[in-house]
Length: 138
Image (cartoon, rainbow, N blue to C red):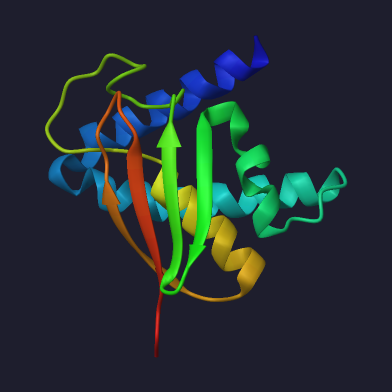
């Protein structure tokens, strides 16, 4: 029950962001998601996880299935069977996207690696979403 409530809260929050900022909803979702990712990582570290990149898929399994693969540019993530999609799971209809995954992943990866990343995402509700997480070069 608690997992369903948590997922419902995430869906409602993302749809609320879409209502508040409209076409900028994915940007706002990425910003909020970064903080969510850092907070999730903090909780897992307090409960015995080392908080390493290899543990991220397990840490986020409550939200769906995650494949996270290191690439020369940074990371490539694929999300399937998403349980927090405001469109597919929540049933909300709106233009654009309000997906928390890109921001959550970047927040966690930045905290773990101490590097900065940018995001390029192909978000397709109900299918496999692909998120390219590129290391920023200064």
